[in-house]
Image 1: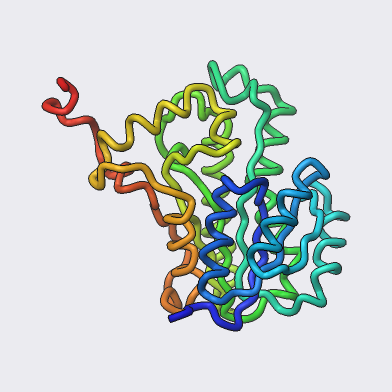
Image 2: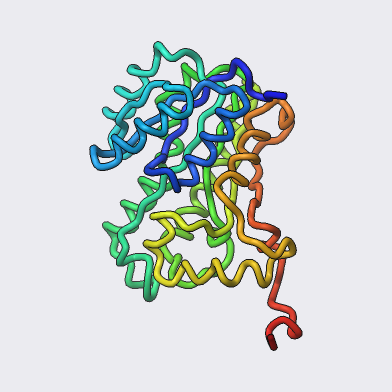
Length: 262
């Protein structure tokens, strides 16, 4: 059964085949959605175009979410694609130097950049596409556990993700009258280019299988499966929420002593 037959989705944040956004796109496509993609910079254009061709051959448009002019141009270029039923925000950035060491060393410019690209961009993206979003559409953003807990070296990105999650809740309220749902997916550690920017983050891939109730790491396709649910009518009354896809890691307080001794 295809849950998204006839629905149109815009997926942002695809950089390569290992991106979480690619796993989301794969599962949306598998359930019948027609996809459009944005990319940021010529460096990833070819990769995104290849992925788009694999998942239905939909339009691929350059978009710099830090530029209002670029956002307006992107929306105009995608107008012929038709009304959007799904909007996926999978965009985040911080200077690598702000993802290690002490958080109080964060520069003012680094803070502005991270909050602009990682949090404000959701508001700007929705604003740019508000007339193209169909009633009862689904908007989803990608977040992480470090938004509400201390994850060493996640630092500024944790602050940005906390802001992003707040944006999700306020957007859900403002768009609810149109039946538009807004949620976030908090994905567990996945080996992506973004993850490698955080000092020591790859070690989490060894920790999660020890501590998480399901005793395994998650995949981009696991995240994609949740995205399908949020995009479909099965989640018709679900909004303003954070959905964890992390094998239950977020619910565990500490490693059980008997496991720590192994």
